[in-house]
Each structure stands twice: as structure tokens, then as C-alpha cells.
Image 1 (cartoon, rainbow, N blue to C red):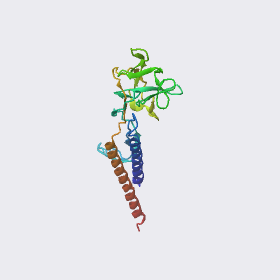
Image 2: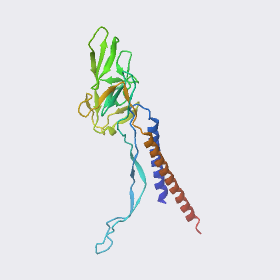
Image 3: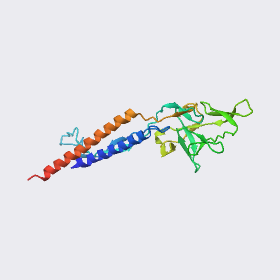
Image 4: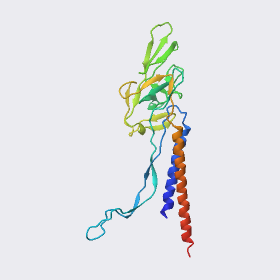
Length: 261
């Protein structure tokens, strides 16, 4: 009986759906996290009677036909790249992006990763880095005798040097954007990598056409909506239960068939 295998694919699909939802909920408080959603496609069909088949010498055709579906499969788990809420942190090196764009991060192997998490620090040499010590590109170094660090909405980093009255510009933070942001590969630690699906990055200064602006002393929170996740979880649970009920029903039908005298 095909119903057993068909319902089993439905249960596996909803199990994956719950795993995606649990990952979203687990990262509700992760800075810059972008939620995922599970998307499904129907499997191949068994064409018992193909539509359009000729049924007589006069050319009459089957108007609808008979197709039996084989179940469901997971098609993708794309990320929803909507803006998360922005919260005040009162920390000078916290930076939120309002709009499109990613911070560029130099990895230890020389490659470039991308992130929306702007919780930065200074290393022992005064270099602007992530919480894992990875350099924020382009490299910006803050002198030991600097104070009153400010970051404009266009990414210009300025400080006051002891003994000077005019602010000194240290550099400008740049952003990267992608044609297909959902095509980025997540590698953990709030980092993404470029892929052939995402396209090559377009790099420019914040505030340019199509690029977001920066907000100092703020952080972007995750875009996970607890109400949406709970609603999706309940729907996934009910779908799982219905598929399990189908397996139970199919088993009872097979049992009744086996017990025929």
C-alpha cells in the first residue's frame, strides 16, 4: 500500500519543519540572526491514466486522467532577510545596519565573510575586530590616546586625539550587498560566505544607492517573531499527527486484508 510510504514522507517533512522552527526559536536573541523557513515540493506522480490519452478511434480523449502522488520532499530552507528590530546598547563599538548590506570580515585564511552582527571590539593593537577577533574590513586602528570615538551613518570613524581640538578621521566602514541574499552560505558565528547562487558582492559606503546606513551604539536583533514560530509549530504538529493517523489507518486496512477468510 503506497499510503504508508506517502505518509512517511509527510512525517519526515514535518520533522524537518520542526527542526527549522526550533533553530529559529533558539536564536531569538542572536544579534543579526535571520530566520529560515522550510519549503516543500510534491514528489513524482504515478500516471495510472494519462490525461489527453486517446480513448477511441474517433479521437476522444481522457479529460483529467488518474495521477497518484508519491508524497512530499524538502525543496529549500531559505533565509528571510527582513530587517530585525534595532536596540540601543550605549556601547561605542556596537553598530547596526538600517537597510541592505553586510559588514565585511577578514577570516584567518584571508577569505572574506559577511555578517549583520555589528558587536565589535578592539584587539590589543587597537584594530577593530569581531568578538572572535576577526578583522573588520577595511582595517581601522584606534590609537591608544584616542577618545570620543564616533561613527557616522555613512561609516566614517572619527576620534579626538589627546592635545587636539579637531576630530581625526581613522577610516570608513564599508558594506557589501548581494543580488540574492538568500543564496549566502551560513557557516555559524553569525557569518555568511559568498556562493555562486548569491552572486558577487557589490561593495560601497553606507548610504549609497541601495545600501543601508549605520547607527552607532545600537545592535540589530534577530527577525524571529515568536508568535509566527508558535503558529508554524502548531501547524507542523497537526500535519505530523495527520500523517501518523494515515499510517495507522493504512496498517488497519492491511491487517483487515490479511485476516480475510
